[in-house]
Amino acid sequence: MKTVLIVDDELDIVEALKAILEEERYKVITCGNGRDALKCLEESRPDLAIVDIMMPVMNGYETIKAIRQRSDSQELPILLMSAIVPTVKAKEYTWAGFLKKPFSLRELLKHVHELAPKDPDQELSS
Image (cartoon, rainbow, N blue to C red; front, side, top):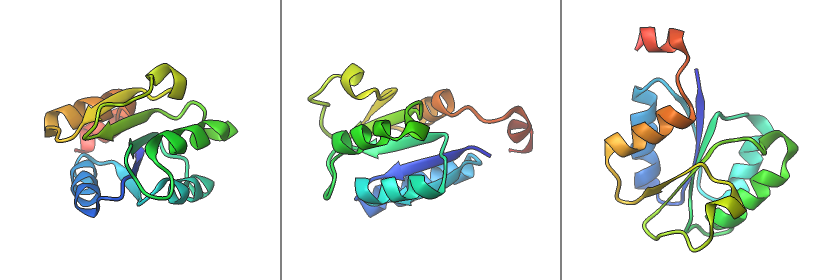
């Protein structure tokens, strides 16, 4: 089972994403800010991180930079999401996709399935 880390301070969005992705047979880990996400990475190795830009403690850009400094997370696909358009270039921060809030279920699942494809045996059981 693939694991998705969701990093966002908006509890309603986190809970909705968690429910959707669990229905799609992903294991979901949630964190309310970047500092908590870095602690989560000490204990788990997600297959995808979905990171909001505007958060307290560490914003999304700072979180991505910190994730990329970890040797075990340099290749982790990151899906950036926000109601605002990113003010920096993806190449500088190495995120794999961007999801503009509000987004559709179809958009979310398209990105997630591309960045963390389910295992073939997982597809059969869903």
